[in-house]
Length: 435
Image (cartoon, rainbow, N blue to C red; front, side):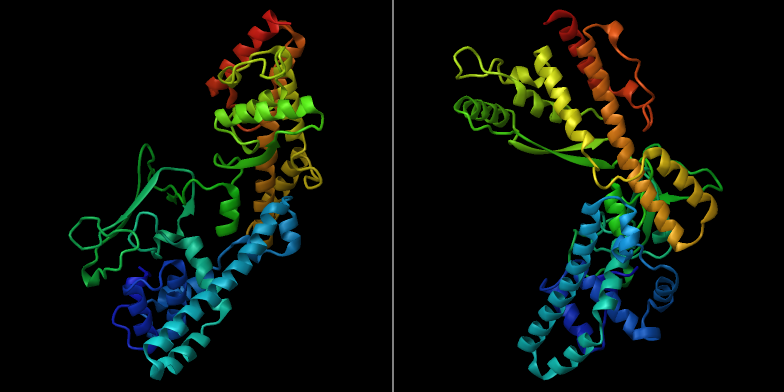
């Protein structure tokens, strides 16, 4: 395993000795230290204990983060936000390299000015390019959440990702137990035991089937930034929409705004909220924002027509119609100016790429971009269908006027959405019993 304790055990060079000391006294740590350790091992060449594995990484395991995509390739994502995040990450990684190197040089000069020159020359030999490559390797391949130290584990880091329950553990003392606190600075020594990766829950692998690892509950943005791929209909993907309570200029509008903001505060909401649209979930928190924004004042003009807690559910037909209209309007604006293709056009293009271009890096990136943007569009489409169905019930005023819902494009989750069905029952009651 490539981890800080193994990289810095019994170092013979001045840089290794210094890094081990900084690690043990916790002056330096985290992925920045590990990236520097990996870079140091690469520079050591055949003298490194990890040489065969490092050769494999250099020759066949180039990290796939979209930070390395061209501007044209990132445009295929049809999402300026993630493209900007990729650019910012590249800048952040260069700053990390400068910060780590400066910290080591400063420590070396204070600790032993006589050996500072050797340490400085060794650090200067580790370029920013090599450091960033090492950092990308860590982000794409390392295990760490359940281990005392972030670690590269040969073979285990070759498994592809799937949204399946998987666990892993490390026997850090060689006696079959799993120990060591996260980030601890205790060297396990040569007795460190076995790393285990195994399915959990109901996950099982039949003989001859591919074995998967789970990189965690990762949305597609995370997968693209760390690994360079996306998953079509990823269950953890979300699309963010921003909703805010607007303030008018007339005295009555200002009073209403303050009362509505107070109601939202009592419900644990701010006047500006980012709502995450997700496959199979109804947008209850978004509707609550619009419900509060559309409720009127009572006869005194000093209070809302409805009690704050009552606004957690539909209370008035006309208020709910306006809330649904507002929510649909915001969602329909998602992707405007960026989504230049339809879902059907993306499906055709994805089928063409999958059939004609398998095996090339360019086709893989194109496929990932298509799966990313398609999943986002399918989520928005599915949420809109649910809102439109509810709106038709209220506007029509009776169950007979409700349009038969279309097939859910992201997996027919609607029949399993109990909260949504409860919501529909509520607005059916409003439609048939209130003016």
